Amino acid sequence: MGVASCQPCFVANGLLCLYRQILIRSAQNYERTSLQFKVATEEWELEQVHELNYRTFVEEIPQHQASSTPRLVDKFHAENTYLVCLCGDQVVGMVAARGRRPFSLDQKLPNLDSYLPPGRRACESACSRSKRSSATGRCSAA
Image (cartoon, rainbow, N blue to C red; front, side):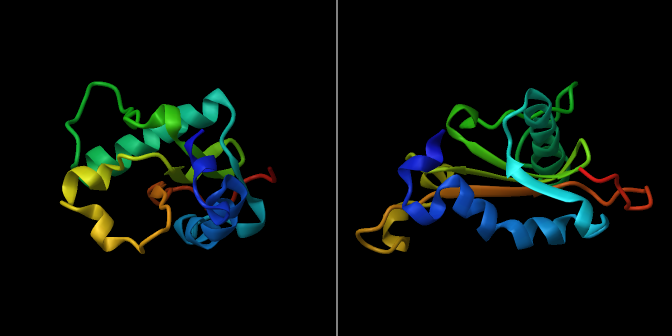
């Protein structure tokens, strides 16, 4: 996937460490000892990533149109590396990262490179989290 082309600190394992605190905060209604952080590799994890994208980018931040199925596949899905926070078999947080241009910001900011440090490569990441659950916040050990 696309992150390998970034600087070494943005390789998937590095991203997992960098974003762990963000994901813990996003899953604050769960017991921290029950959370598992990993690169998404299973089809069921990726399906929940698409559902989480829909909740985030259609329902919470209306960047995309609603559809009949609560599922939004990122247009860079094939290039993304997804880092997920699991509570049992539920994805409660997610970071998508990729290191290949053009980034989505290239379409939103003219001359994006003028905002970046010269001579360095950048990665683009997007973070999503689930809405607070009405459950007790406890989950079984993963």
